[in-house]
Length: 405
Ligand code: NZQ
Ligand code: ZN
Image (cartoon, rainbow, N blue to C red; front, side, top):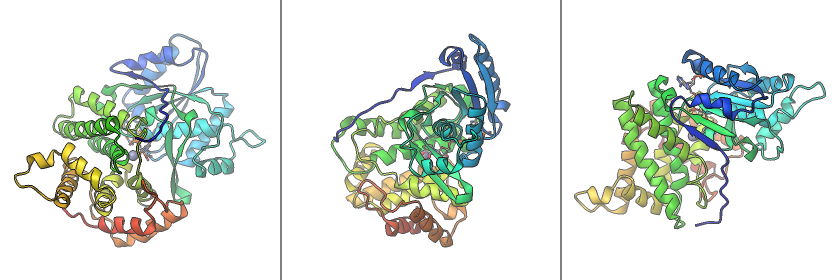
């Protein structure tokens, strides 16, 4: 196991009707900006619950900023950051999914980068984003109300922002962006459209894989946790498909997705993130949902990198899919791995998710623009060994053209 520091200050408040806890969690004299997305939080009544809780116990002044897009847009977020300064906001409260929470983290981090007229400097904010927001040393406090289990943003300090005009979707991370708390009410997920539920399961699954499927460092806790999370997602993913109204299933999916990317299973182990970094370019160029870019790419990443990931792939086949003990014949290592990859593809397919570029109606003409964008964004040394250059990324994309299974 490698050396590590694990720090996670996020208070998780989990369960039905827990939005009312906002009256205790948000400082009583705060000037709060509620941020939300395209309207689901209003339609489902969640925003009303939030407003009521904030008006209880205290003298808070509450403002609202709606319209944060899925894959949150830089320009929209800077409008919210201007509002933070205009209204002297000292607490941000995103109500939504990864996009609203990530976007609000970015707002919290860049709000102090102002011009002389008090507006947030677009140039400085862009520079901050291209530098992963690492050098920012102050931020507005933030707490979150999660409405879609998927990204883990509710319990981590990272995010991703999209800049359509520049065709760039870029990650950032800064410990100041940890939410003070996150409220996870699983009943809120019952209003999600079916495809968003499946996206969430797949995103969480791939988060685990990015931190697990590298090379062994004898990290027994991290490996066992990761394998458990994968098995739960496989089981509960199928369960939610069959019985979407089952609240117990929703609860387990919600907590699993949070655990998948809160830093725990990634501590002291090598991490990959190749699938995510190529996936961000697919979203930015073709507007494909984040999770779907991952299910398109992961099987090809596994096949292309099967030599360097050999030991973990075998461990995955045995411990997650129980392959050698189930098979009638003793398969050699390569076919065991291929079977595990096919099982992974079938799992994604069963959730109604694409597993190839063809499934997303893209052909080989899509590949070179993605490679150019990876180059433009400095994504030229991906993976746990930093050895996935553009040639490797091209091969991954070529493998992803048509699904093998
Ligand atoms: O915008 P509204 O109207 O709210 O609708 C949203 C949106 O259309 C809808 N929705 C959310 N909760 C709902 C609901 N509809 C009905 N009922 C509810 N309870 O769902 C749609 C998708 O929302 P979004 O926030 O975009 O989804 P998700 O949570 O999957 O977030 C995706 C974003 O997170 C980034 C992705 O790149 C993407 O930009 N990620 C963030 C990470 C992180 N912070 O650690 C890691 C991830 O790998 C990921 O990159
Ligand atoms: Zn993701």
